[in-house]
Length: 413
Image (cartoon, rainbow, N blue to C red; front, side, top):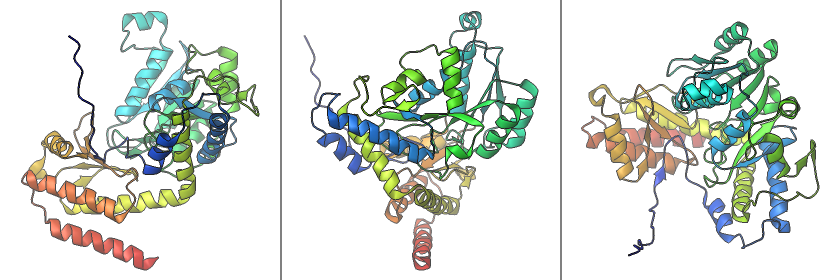
C-alpha cells in the first residue's frame, strides 16, 4: 500500500551560522510572485541579462565571463576548477574545512587516471600540493610566496574568507605573489562576495573567482553561484578544454548570452533556467546593490564587533577575524561541551554551528542580521543557552552593555 505522508511544514528558524543565512522577504516574494513562464519568455531573458550586469557591478569587474552557475557554491567552485586538468601543477592553501574541500576537489581534477584509480575518493595527485596553515591562522603573503617559489605551479587556489575557522586570508598578497611567479590565481569567494567591499579587477594575479547564493548575496540556496573569469583564464580553457559540459566555463557562459567573448543582445537557447530562480536572484542582487557594497561592508563590521564584544563579556574567546561570523571558544568551565550547546540551540530554532574539524569551536553568524534588534536576539539566545548549561553569565549586564554600544553609535552619527 502506498504511504502518503502529511504535508511538510518547516517552521521559521534563525539561521545564525556561517551560511546559509535567512533569505530576505523581498527575495522570497519575488520568487513566489513570478508567473508560470516559458524559460525563453522575454522577461526571463531580460532578467538574466540584468543579473549578469549586476553581478559585474557586485564583483567590481569588466570581465565579460561573469555569470551565475545553477546550484550552490560548490557548483560555482566546480565550474572554476574545471579548467584544472590531470597533471596540471597546482598549489592549494588550506586553513579550514572548506578550503580543505577545495583541496580535495583539486586533487581529484589534477589526478592522473592511475592516481584516481588508486584512491578514487581521496586521490594523492603528485601534481597537486596542499599547503596546510594551522586552524585559526590566516594564509599570508609570505606563505604563498614561499610555496609558489618552491613548487612553480600553473595554478594556485586560496579561499578569501574561510568559514571553517573564521579567518580572512591575504587576498592582496596572494594576487601579488601569483603575478610575480606567473601563476594563474583562483579564489574561493564563497563567504566574502556581498559582504566585504572589494573589486576583483584590483587583483590582476587572480583569474578565476567563484562564490555562492547562500551567504553575501543571500538568495534562495538553489539559485545561482556567481563566477567571474578573466580573458586569460578563458584563453586557457579554449586552448586546453575542460572535462565537463554542465560546468564548462565557456559553454555555461553561452546560456547567459556571452558568446565568443561578447554579450549578445538576446540569449540563445539556455539550460532551462527557471523564471522563479531568475526573479529571486535578480531581487537579491538588487537588494545588495541598493544597500551599497561599501555601506554593507561597514554594517557587517559594526554589528560583528557588537556581537564579538557580547560573547567576550560572557567569558568566550573569539579567534576569528571575519565580519559575518564569530568563531569562539567557550568559557573554560564549559569547554568540551560545544556540540551539546549547539544541539540545544538548534533544537530551540537558533541555528548556530560547531566547527566541522578539530579543534571543536562554536560559530555564530550574522548573515542578513544587520540591526540592533537582530544582534540583541542572537546575544539573548546565546546567553540563555550558556546559562542552561550552567555557565556563569550576567545576562542583564551583557544586554545593558550591548544597548549602550548601540546608543553610543547612534549618537555619533
